[in-house]
Image (cartoon, rainbow, N blue to C red; front, top):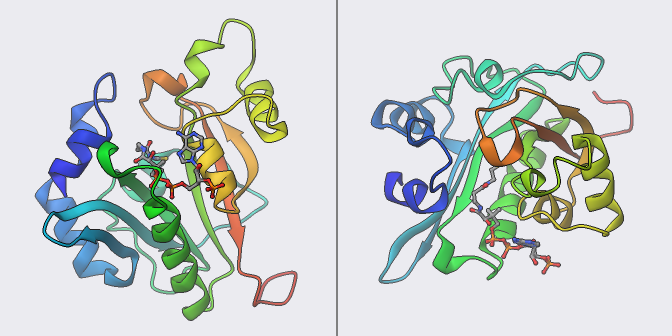
Length: 197
Ligand SMILES: CC(C)(COP(=O)(O)OP(=O)(O)OC[C@H]1O[C@@H](n2cnc3c(N)ncnc32)[C@H](O)[C@@H]1OP(=O)(O)O)[C@@H](O)C(=O)NCCC(=O)NCCS
């Protein structure tokens, strides 16, 4: 799993944000339903997705990655939380564009439905933003990716998975390429009546 992260998040992404053993042990101990892997026969693990449950209040949507995921340790996992929050999703570069990321996402949607949660939520990095940051605000960039005028390696992927933006958050994660911004992206459980529980 740590090897997958090393390949999936190369510099300038900070190496200290790759998983460590304690974080991975917490993921399978505290919320095993939210610890998913993609495995290729004869190769091993080539991708993973991790979540935790949080009590999310849509009227106060802004938070940082560190706050809401306990810096990836998920000790704040709330077994009664209404929202499945995505800590991370990644696929090794050699296995991208094969549908594995989307398959992991759809498997996590199944977890949301099985647990009767209101939504899946997570902050999507904007790794393409740095190349236009001189001309566009992060909000304008997200808008242009939404209209299809620009493509972003993560935001376009999340949109293709059916996630929709609810906010653009500054200072979300120490992430040079995204200039620290993330788009908070939601998928609502279609099997719950509108308006929540
Ligand atoms: C984001 C990531 C998980 C996507 O995984 P993947 O297995 O390549 O994605 P898939 O093959 O399932 O693609 C699903 C859809 O997204 C689109 N997509 C995937 N990568 C894309 C890219 N770089 N640019 C534009 N669209 C992309 C695909 O074309 C596909 O669209 P379709 O459903 O219309 O066919 C992978 O690129 C990755 O690990 N990136 C680095 C880690 C990272 O930044 N993770 C996000 C943390 S917030």
